[in-house]
Image (cartoon, rainbow, N blue to C red; front, top):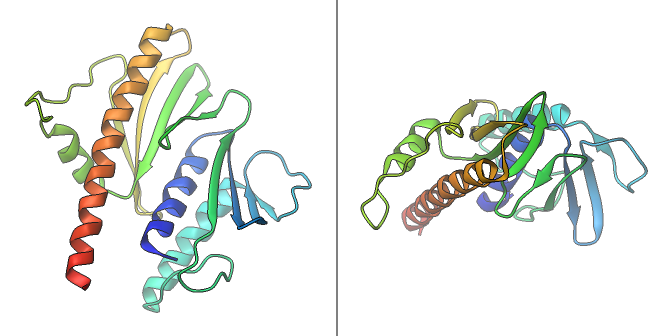
Length: 199
């Protein structure tokens, strides 16, 4: 897999595992390869649970690193990435940019994943914006971080009670969008730095 394809695999796997009702489809061109999450049905491809996907990807990462090999997905040729499509069922939704949400018990959870570690995410969030204003995210949608060591990603989430009004929900979504934008910029900068080192 390419570095970009591996990143998509890791973050989509993490989100699908973290939130109920999130589904992931893998395909190569028009050929379905794998369906993850939701209910088992005849979708023209093998079906596995999000827990099984996370375990499989985590173990594959360890094996590939131990053998100093590039990870491949379901025997696709080297350098070929699957197309990954994330969706939601029931109250679970996928929003533009890779943020997903689901109702868990009496909470609405908005979440995305990044390949930055938690320390880098905290540093990214604490940076001042171009207008020199520090990023602020106050109650009731305080940003929470959780490291998924197996997938080498950080889950970034904001939670609200199910009785929160639309204004509060929009505020949580906007807060996460700001963090996501900053994380994407940091990931891009890291990719460019790595590319310069390898040229």
